[in-house]
Image (cartoon, rainbow, N blue to C red):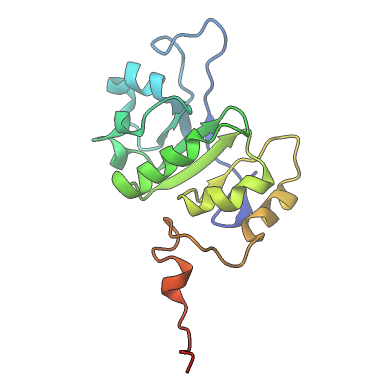
Length: 170
């Protein structure tokens, strides 16, 4: 199960992770909907580019620009959060949405916790795979923890002071 577009749904994508001893060139990519590491995409691009149901995931130390020119191929791009306190994934998501114009599903995977999800949504994530040891129904509530945001972001182009009409004081 994952959270997609603020609803809990079945996850029909398999996230491929390399096991110890696996190489990006030699690992077998499962058939069906598969989200592969960036290194696997780069190593097996020729074989994978013909597949309609392929996604890619970036680790927090990888750059979104590596996907430039291929973005339209992916129905889903995931960003891995190896630790909840590693914020580089926020920058990757915003970069994918704002600078590179990615419009497909953008999924947060890894150490994803409820208290981060509202902010992840603000930078462009629309799907979340919370940690397996957490209640997904409780995590879903994290998307509505706040009713208003002050700053502009991918989900709101104007900051609050530009959105609110104030009456003049005489």
